[in-house]
Image 1 (cartoon, rainbow, N blue to C red):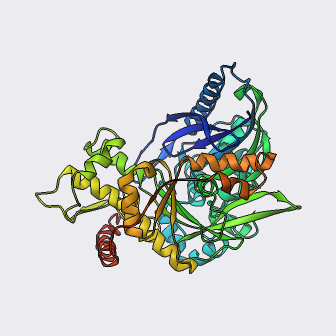
Image 2 (image 1 turned 120 degrees about the vertical axis):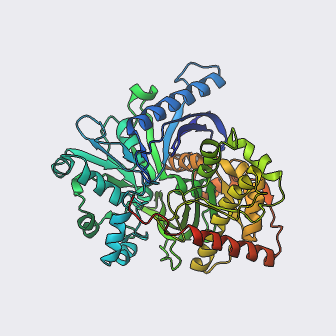
Image 3 (image 1 turned 180 degrees about the vertical axis):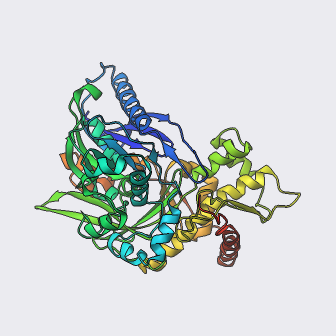
Length: 509
């Protein structure tokens, strides 16, 4: 049997998963890498470590795949590679050597909040939203790249001379996998930079001028499904085509087979990311959500179809559970949180607002900070654990409500995936706070699966969306259990807690 290899480069770990033509996981490898927090509000990665860990898990995955077949390494056929990645994280490197000029600035990083505020005060937010579909926030890549050009000595002159290359993590991996032969990004990742016109799918000169970005550093924009280049044989033993590329949340939407207008999914990873397919038109949000490219599909009849999505982002989801473990020390492993939270019937009116790196949609407050309110002498670590789970579900409920209002569609269910979607208590909370069923598929590795599907479509493993839809199947359906008045009262109380977290970091990071 032939296989597709998905490289899933996330915020806290690099993973590689081999899928068969039925969309089943055949082998998996994962490795965490270091997080760097040099100043309050700053988050960085070592781009060289991202590359080394991604290569290591790719090789390990292929070794496991070969062992499953009792075959020698490299003898099991991998038809193509799909890449999916943490989005917005910004890498700048030397074209001649491939060495990064500084650590990568991670999507969670808030150092450019003052710059965004200055641009907003100058009246640029409307222009940016019209062209990019995005809000003006330090979450996205443009101000991160601008910061590197301004603050790393000698970098701007070298960038203008064409000596440096910029990319989000997909571009960085493609560059390394192809030995520097291909400098490219797909339309879904490019749509997260604040530099691409979402309708023309081209880098925009007015935006480049606004952020003072030289065009010479930019990658070529390519379709999400299509052969981009070939991996050098020295890395994985043979010249495997790279045939699919998409940002992690767009890939998950594709992997969830959300191909119809109005279909929505939520991924529970480091953050939570809810996307709804809006078809071939970019919908302008009235509720501070994002309009983004979902994917640019394979060529059909001489044309490529671009799917657009509405998106809402929660910055702290699984990362909130990590904080319980590493920051507070009230659990020893993330797996413990469900049983601890279930040991109490409610939070005792305690609320955790995990705005550790600001608030995402629909609040978009870069100066909000984490808040724990409603504590009494009776509050225990179990109540805090339950409040942490509720915070994940309540933030997602905020997104769901905004998305319903923007689209003018009464969403009837939410498809879920990601590591925390295996937490049954959290999924039941989510259904309760949404008031609609939450549906978990049998395969929850949908981010990597989406990348594999995009690659497989490009080389003919699957004929189209209908074939992929047939492979999607339900593991469990969570039905809402709260009455509408109780649900509304809880959401209102949550919004009171959110209000107390707003604008806390008055000074710039």
